[in-house]
Image (tube, rainbow, N blue to C red; front, top):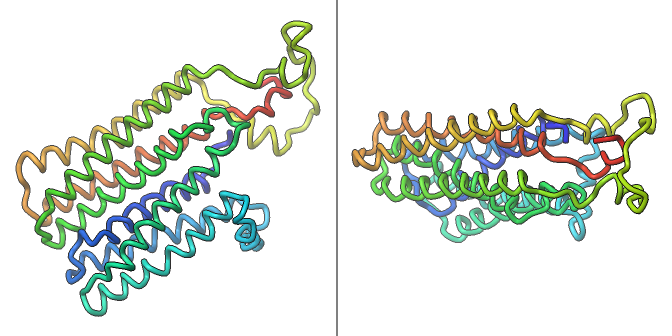
Length: 309
């Protein structure tokens, strides 16, 4: 599949924003300090930026609102509806933090639940597609949720350290657990992909398998079209493996090492820890961008059976 930059930006930035929103909803950051107020603004900015980026992939972005009307049957529509609904408790929490330095428990729980359900709906847009066998697995939703949570908790830990929040150790432990779980899920996802046997083949797609092996003599048409440009992207296996190692090292190992060192040193809240955790969160985001690029680039759509793919 073609790894469209707008979709990669959407899934990574909004995922990080929802992960941070879920942490803020749990009330683990002190709402009375400036750093927490800035965390709310960053979460809103990441979510808004990601959602706006997703509209760039549409042929007619001005008609994006119509996607909200099919929530009964479409994961894309459900994601849009829930994405908008999540703004309500998140904005309420941000106003309470900035105005009175307080945390609204009910709104916080609603924010956390809605944020994670929204990320799940985003994942199901891809996991529900039987025509893309690589995506059609529960591991896809697990990866999206865990990457969102790990990025959000790493970023939240940075704000907690900057705000002088006591109990930073708990957030660090949770961030480390989410980072480890996210990359274990992704490694399992990649392992499944490597061992995957195509359910749809040129023989089954054409119905000529009873004759023998089917090979393409001529393409259906000479010029490129939407199918060949969007679903015919291919990445060399050696390049994919190299990028996977980079993603794992930058987005998994590096942040985990920083968190482990801070836990061993029993680092106190302050700017040194905040800067270190901010770098860990940015590294995790960079690794997630590479991972998400591979998520699309390595996927094979069944329609390419008719194009010799």
